[in-house]
Length: 468
Ligand code: ADP
Image (cartoon, rainbow, N blue to C red; front, side, top):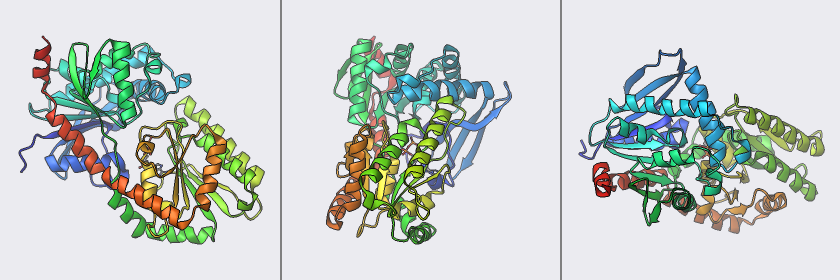
């Protein structure tokens, strides 16, 4: 048994342990880390129950303790649908126009964080390392400190961090930023996100930023960029063994020599789906020789469907896909294949492998794992080409992709053309370089780097005393 401190991971949802690989990115990474250190994974159970009936459930799975609490419908609406997804998500993706700020929802968000903290505090040991994930839980450390918790607590933001001018439009930006200073370490996806955080602390909060130390509100904390990655070997295996390789063979048969462009995204306005459809239409418009020879497969499962901006967006996308098909389809060729379904990861791997071009063109994205999955699923001897938005965190290190500005439909259309025409030699050169980068940034490294940095951060008491 290792003597390193126990790890306690906290995220909005607690994923499956047994089927973690099927659930993807975060679940794989956390289960790996928790198994290594024998830990707890704490979060919402995914169940809504009657008010006052919320309970703490604990169960053991594979040496990991899963601890979950239920939410009432009212809590779920205010905390999750409301403040998290209708206010913070658009804010963090630079979409001021879509923000719906309601004080009542903010209060529910904060009170759910308090309830999380009260339940979690009962499970913590003094030397635990606590790792909190994502924007649903910004105030969790502050609430844990109120419960007299003195453990090292780290926070990782999976989304982008916006410029201070955008963040400052949120009426409560200062209390949220102050709450972040109850953490000991804050991790961001990219150096750019980190720079924007430091800038916000200095310009909007009167704080100071020196190297990896940032201070404000009477506290000094550590910050860093920890770009998340995927389990590259596992995804490769998915693409080249059953059932992924069977899906691949089936897809190839269906394609009958046509080239497939693939997009795989939650149906979210940040993913650039409307502009992507438009760019594909422009590509077909300016390259008539591609007619009948290329299809765009867009897999986009419905997400956050009870929120109005998402429903409106879905309708617009339905119209845009229909417009492109209406304009270009022939009786023997439909250019856009558009599915609103989630697919098993192994099926996805087979589909990526069968696709000549991966189209990942978010308007803004924390990192984007689909770009990495597409690359890992390619045959190194005859790889496809990744077209990637400059505004995805992944573009900061996947430099050999065809980088595009998704606001520029012509440039994106031209990249689709270049990707399809690229020589085998050039495709191999780029793919080799990209795979080296993926392997260097894999998910194991991400979690090891973060957890080590958290373990090395000064303890809460020491940091606080220094100030007083
Ligand atoms: P986000 O976290 O914003 O949804 P990412 O690209 O970082 O974006 O991660 C998305 C994850 O969800 C990837 O692992 C991807 O494989 C998975 N995913 C996206 N669309 C589907 C789908 N239709 N079926 C199954 N998994 C999907």
